Length: 479
Ligand code: UTP
Image 1 (cartoon, rainbow, N blue to C red):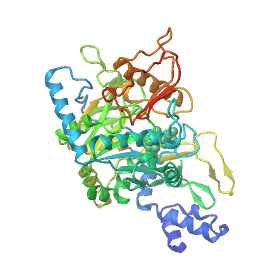
Image 2 (image 1 turned 45 degrees about the horizontal axis):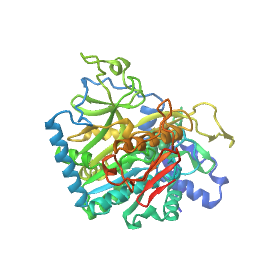
Image 3 (image 1 turned 60 degrees about the vertical axis):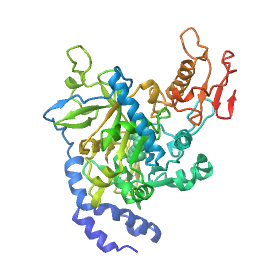
Image 4 (image 1 turned 180 degrees about the horizontal axis):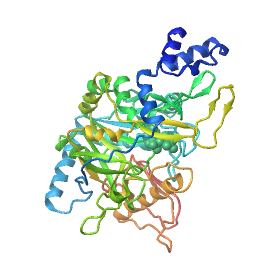
């Protein structure tokens, strides 16, 4: 049993003794769990967090020199760029064939906006086959491994709240056809939620209010879990990082990998041209010479709206959380467990037990949560490639229950993209008077993960004129 006396002393030193207020009422097992939870918290850091992030709102540093970054275009406009892309594509394919690439999904988020019960990766998210998000990603990884002649390992980050359910789902679905030994789960860390006075909240008498420490928590988690060592044993050099909730993501992109490798970059990113200056995407900037993502909420409006001489948006590149990380970079950042990305503060509604032992469900934000964001590692990278991608090809996340960035908008975008790939290959896709696609169409990632990969794989008798729902997979066409 962890020692309650020492714990009490630590808590007193840091003005957090209240978390043991109900300790004597708890059964021994609950007491032990609470002590274990408390032991996960680094109280030497808590005082600083409370002072700098909880009691006061950190002010956004107005950085000295902010410039737009250099962006590699999605489609080369001249012969020189086309040649560089072709060489990078070949290099990316070689890296894959040599088994030097791993897939990495961060899936530890709480998905509060979506409000789905269970890990978000289990959500059925495709228009015809109703595949869960995890399967959409798994099939791409499987297909990339088959194309390269070398299976890719897949690292999946979970949180303490969804780890058991995530692993059970993978087992139940037989790892979606992947070899179980090539799937590595790692659990991210947690952070306590504080009230506005800096006191750690209890969600129950014997339970701290803990939540995942943000997707930036993946960097220390990669080291702590042994994932980095596992990668080293397998000869992995590059980590393809993506989120669980964007079914359009191209998980393994040889061009992106090759551009990163050719530049000897440490961390790279894909970017989208923003729809409008105030779109809620992080902004790629170069701040004092370092590639940096400035969150939409931190970007001064005059900068967000600034234009170039020819009238285009100066800071047009938005971040969509698709990265390549060199393993050596993650090793360097996390050496000696010293990975300290900045914290981001968010005010949230967190149910809590008050001093009288009564559970309160707040109707307005009552708590501060602190998270790390993975893009804050970008300025620490020696070299970075920012590759532009097309929104229509690669970004339609499922964040909200309704409205924009919801399952409905993502399903629509998946059908639209499948139709565009088929049209590019010469298939007639029926559209209504408004140009909307008249049928649900889904293309299995096992058949193709981009328009080019579809060439030569479409059954010659494919006929969509009846407007029926169609699923194209290596097994043929189901409708
Ligand atoms: P979001 O920032 O969209 O957060 O995560 P979320 O938790 O999924 O959803 P909300 O904000 O509660 O509604 C983007 C990606 O980062 C992962 C998520 O699983 C998602 O793939 N993530 C987020 C983590 O892995 N850990 C975290 O602590 C936060």
